[in-house]
Image (cartoon, rainbow, N blue to C red; front, side, top):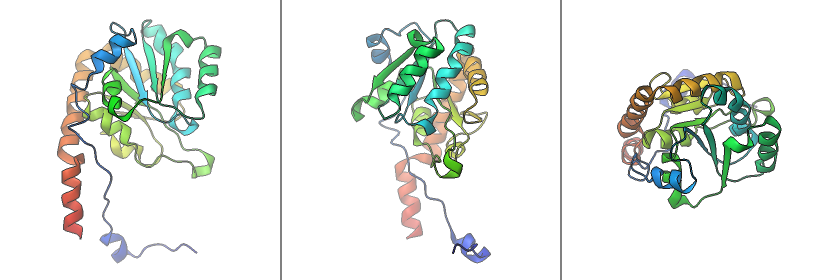
Length: 224
């Protein structure tokens, strides 16, 4: 039977999250080459890097695309990753009428992930909690990897995902599953290059200040 922690026990607990390799994920990671290879060089790109499962919210992004395209007709959604939800996502893109504006890369080698982040103008993954709280996002390291790459992020409000975003500074947190909120934030970012630059730079700075592996290793050493 679960019991509440005493104040003394709770006071001894320290959060020790995973970190980001800021030398691997950085603004010069090769995104331009990926964009050129995919024929996206002149198009606004919303990128999502994740395993394809319902919790992650790629379906929300697809459902948001009609609104995004109404404001940015050349926009494209770049979905990077593989998983059991891919067939359903492809069907949804067809039925929503946005198939021509959604690109699926499938799984990509680890070494190519930084460049695929860099291919985006905005990173978005509007994750949501499912199954009565049993299917929930832990932290959402992808938001931090995107920030390290210099991208503004749009995150869902599931579990620990908001901990990986400085809301209003490195990006925004939206209600998971809300295509309207997701579209609204993405449209604002795609229309404002200066805002994207400012949020991307703040995200990179935040990763360097707080989320580097060497800083977290030092925190662990101090705890031990």
